[in-house]
Length: 218
Image 1 (cartoon, rainbow, N blue to C red):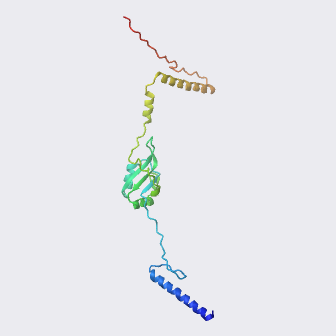
Image 2: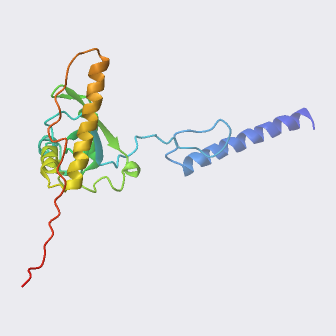
Image 3: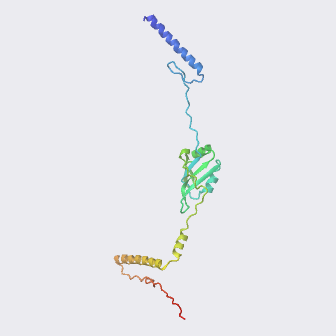
């Protein structure tokens, strides 16, 4: 192949690449990027923020006194509150200082999570975070409308102390008291204290009386 033929081949290749570029621009009118080598144009895809679908919020560091009614009254200024729940102790009913809140609109939940996180309330910084839908536990709202009645331990102890006992149960209780009293006397003696402890009243319990009934003879 001579020099003239090589030049003619280069010119034809350049024309072909230019024609392909023109065809690509005509086919893709919205093309924003053209490759250096001849070929179809490419459109640059803008990476936008992911659409938020979360409506549930985790709220931590809840102060004392900021309970269900107060929380609903405070957060309903942003939007409609669907439901809320504060974690409580099942025995005492006291707050565990964290809970969950659900809005109807996910955009409202996003605004609350962004603007109210670390909000100072009653000397506590509220910790508010979005909970993704896939991480919401299916039993999260199980007892949302159920109030926990705290156990009255004073009443339980009173009933336990005042309940009726049989003679065997009473003797067992006395034996336990005497055992503790004996240990107390030993500790006092080991400490070098010369003290005569008074005797325990009711140490000797009367035995149960057996009454025999005889048939009356005519």
